[in-house]
Image 1: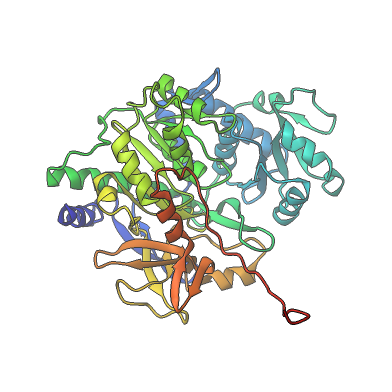
Image 2 (image 1 turned 90 degrees about the horizontal axis):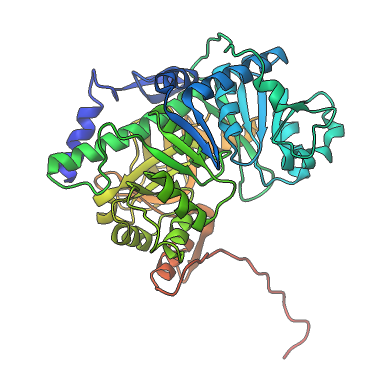
Length: 504
């Protein structure tokens, strides 16, 4: 079945095909890109108008069709334009996963402005840093984020603030969301370059302040096409190999996804939410993560795909309600944001009736996924995350940047259309993390003869013991093998032991 995988890969990316690859020069470096990709996210959103009678967003008892979403999105964009927001200006979104998050997102990127995704868990000090760093003209926020912002408002007197779901009244210095959506529904006509910024997502980092990653329209659109390519690749290859795909879907089946991860991250936004919209599917938002509530929604809404961090899949399968809830509608289960341990792949494959296990590997700095592996391919190689997708070159390098041989570990570097433009206001960090277009992922990995990637650990989380490399992720995977372990984390702790002040 791997021969078929290689052959179908070549067929899908051949000249004249939808996923044909070309090499362009972007920011002075050669970049692999899809020749037939839409220019910008605006084109993706406008294309969804074809699904106007379908349901698009669901939140509790609220439901929005694509037609309603397009009308609201155009009103938001028009209101922003009336506030002086022009292409290239930034608009911050600070709220939990309400439907307004996605509506505001599509409005901003469709008018050529730039979304600043504000982490909903940030305290006032962190909000202050991101707002000072990104200098948005407008911030759209819910009541919880507004209360935090009020503590720092004195430093942002010129920032226009719009409040969403304000249950305790609308302050005088805040624009009510109802005013925004009641603005004339007229989407501004703009021209967007593929390499314009689409959004700024802040990376958490391991030290210091977060960095604002500049995701471009080219990167986000290429990520969507990579997702489409991976689905076409694996389903077609399995069919040619005569292997029944566990997660097979009907050609006209509408994809229904449960949004379980924050929309200010690429997993929830770029990979789940954008991917569903591009294919006319339905997004179901949760107020907050709850495994029992997720199971209820999956049963009642007939959810077909669940993509989140691995621990959420574990929690659902371990939940007392799992045995009594109908999860047979699920066709795909897995995700990214953290390593999908081999034991979890086996458990999902064994326990889930129709859902194929899936593992995606990616980063904020690549606008989404770098590679993805699912179904029998993942079951066969549960330690792998698959081959880097067509818009990427990939290599593992040693400490001086030289490529290592197949099977040898090194830091994984990738280059291609999905790599970010850089870090906002951080030229030194950009130069340190991106060399000639190659993004230093910070992940230790190796590649086999088929170019499949095997992640070993984060470069800074390796322990050297007795001359041997010990990886935290490796220890975690071993612990998860024990049936009594539901959750674990292994981390590197440095302890300084001083000399004793007196002899024992």
